[in-house]
Image (cartoon, rainbow, N blue to C red; front, side):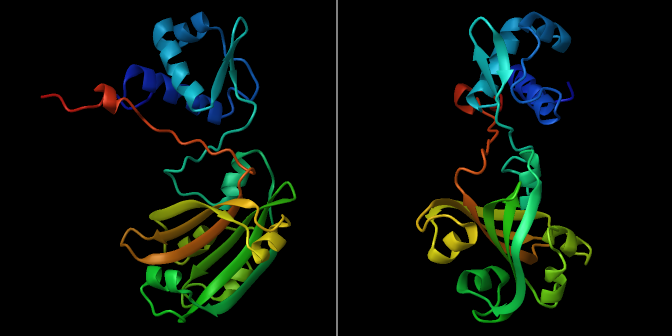
Length: 251
């Protein structure tokens, strides 16, 4: 199945089925092949198959209906898990929606304290800032603010991005983002954010503050994203079993 051998069999089965779901082979709401047929095609026992399916049930990828079979959940999962860096557009596309942008505006502005610290500059130093409201099928779902150095991307270059990715613009200038460190926390919509997202003041949001760096640890992008809490279903794939002795070094 092309899965790393360090995983237990049930986790290999789960990962293989997950990949087939995300690839669209098994569509949301569709029924998987019968257990005997699926186990035979994977070359595993039915008990091992059930163990793998149980993992995906816990993750919300599959659900079993007694006497009917095993089904893919109706809600599309993100093909990008939280351990991978991906753009807002890619996240929206992964849900089957059409990404768009409204209220796009770029300018040169003084750096707020937290952003300045991330870049290693003084508070108030000038940075290029891009503010956008991202839409999914026309609905406003994410309010984003991106900061980068003005000598890397001037405000005019950010204005020209429209629905495009800042990651791509940076890569075109030889600054490929290698990794990001994100903090994710709940927040309540301020008056400004509420108006931009067209939601009531105090609406629950999922806020992400991320610092992106190159492989040489050069910070090239800092982002603040306010997501409508009910706009996306995010699944985190956690390889487990350590507490039960799986994946532990053998003495």
